[in-house]
Amino acid sequence: MINTHKKINQKLCGKPISIAENVAEVVLKLTDEMAADEKGLVHGGFIFGLADYAAMLAVNHPNVVLGAATVKFLKPVVVGDELRAVAKVVEAKGKKYKVLVKVKKGDDVVFEGEFIAIVPDTHVLDR
Image 1 (spheres, rainbow, N blue to C red):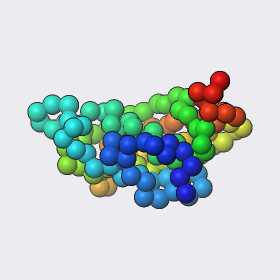
Image 2 (tube, one colour):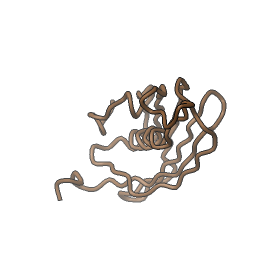
Image 3 (spheres, rainbow, N blue to C red):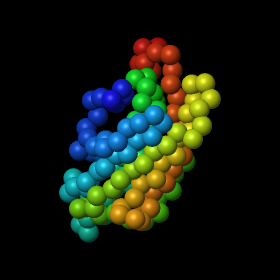
Image 4 (tube, rainbow, N blue to C red):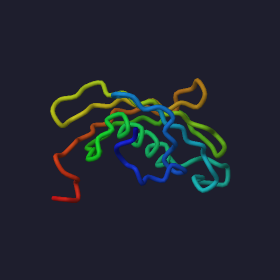
């Protein structure tokens, strides 16, 4: 059951295919509106958005927000590619979660990152 980011546009950030405790998988089909140039190179922001969404779903708390991220873009992706992000919580200390995310195109890792998610007591906009 999805407990966070319920109104996110899944055409832009990916469709969840598996959510379990501390793990999530999300798939994104790269479309023309994601292209950065005439060759069909997809803007990295869409890949980051996919990875971030997967990380938030791995924590899966209604108040979860991104606090920090360290990422690597390893290979380019183009319109028409399908990407799969796998996110795993590897450490939880109080309200802070470290989530590792790998994004693959087939067997190739195209992006990897460490996301720090924070779960405040109330929604971040209720402060």
